[in-house]
Image (tube, rainbow over all chains, first blue to last red; front, side):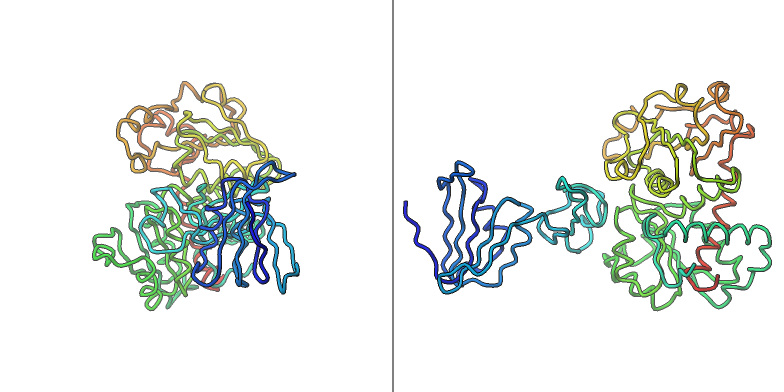
Length: 135
Length: 303
């Protein structure tokens, strides 16, 4: 299967196979602004299989949250068909309105407030800002 | 120590130096309460109790009155605009227009944090669900410090409902910062300390038997099973009598053991323990008022 390259935009590579649609969902982008391709189960020498997302004509996309879904993914920025920046994702220190607190005793269950989680340790545990529960 | 304008929501909102500063101030107040009888004159405390309270609310009110200040507030949500569906954020914005400092108890975990985010006046968490109760911790630590003259190097047993016990969570988080403190957590499997509290301790063990754990303890912190936090009454009934401390069990305990309880007690400490010199749970309450006097004065910049 052939996927054409993009001239300007963002490529998210090395996404764990099967997670591409979830990653796209977390990006929360306006899909009408440019061309979006989610390529699934691409052969990879490193991982066996991987997913790739190509976002043509997108610049300012908040990719920090992606570390939460798949911190092994790589984000590549393309300008005039050249790679201008490549970043490895890490677990974000803080995520807002991405995870939801499931603790029925948490204030988020009754008050209209953003759902905020903080990274609690290097293993990737997150805790609710309000009640300290895990998501 | 400069705590003017700060909120106290969680135990780690105070540094160890600030906590020790509050204890030192509380000891000065204990020694000469008349010197502090007017330090908060002209100041108004709002007490916002969305959940029942006897000791905490009255001790805050007594503390403010003994500092020369005055008190307004409500003691049940039905008598506030919460009954009309007003958000917590809007309520605290209103209160901040009237009072100089507020103390709040709420059944939801994190409620005090939300209130503080919307409060222009210092806000004190007097209990947010089963999460934290930092002023009970100040009470507990001051009681121990006053009696033992130290907080380092103690073996502290916590017994009962360690899952929903907000006083337990706060006490562990604050106590774990002192050197050489060892925790013995005594609870049924269903009521173990939550993971986020365990992460604060350097040295702890979890056991099921109170009698076995007693001989090594310097402090025993008993708690009641928190009926109001259970969604299922059957679970509460099954667990409520898990631990009962009585005079017979205390025979193997140290002679200088301190038995504390945040109160109210249900049946987890038999009344035959009340006259034992190691029972501190009634004396503890007076320390609660003094440390709350110190806290109110400090947050109002009057210390």
